[in-house]
Length: 152
Image 1 (cartoon, rainbow, N blue to C red):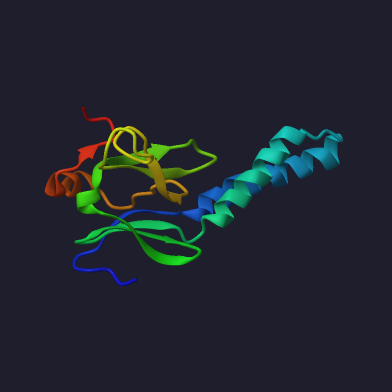
Image 2 (cartoon, rainbow, N blue to C red; image 1 turned 180 degrees about the horizontal axis):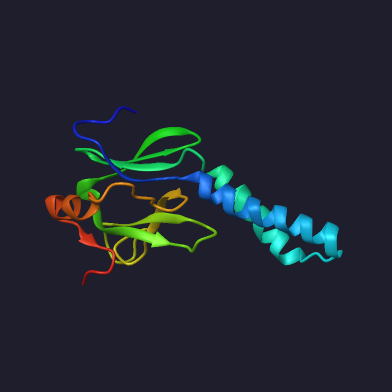
């Protein structure tokens, strides 16, 4: 799949904090276990789960081009939705440990799943992680006549 026209990065995984922060917590847990013979299995399990989730989303990204959304994951670059198929979209944050995904509400009848009343999550990434000050999402939504996630 090749992008068409101008490509905007809506979000891409930043794995280093996802691995570094739980990694430091796991090292501290090991030191506490050695020094004080005390181990919290819950924190250890959540730290390991966070590292595994971050590793599975290592190359994930969501791009937008002239035709619609492009999603990059372990299987490569694929087109998700064309602009005229989308009614509403926006980032759905699942919390610090599990990252974010782009929630897309496709056009259709109210009973379609996914459809205007039921979203589908595409492009699961580890936090949108903007290093730029300009977010391209609002401009893309207005250009293509798409509502935001919480617009009425």
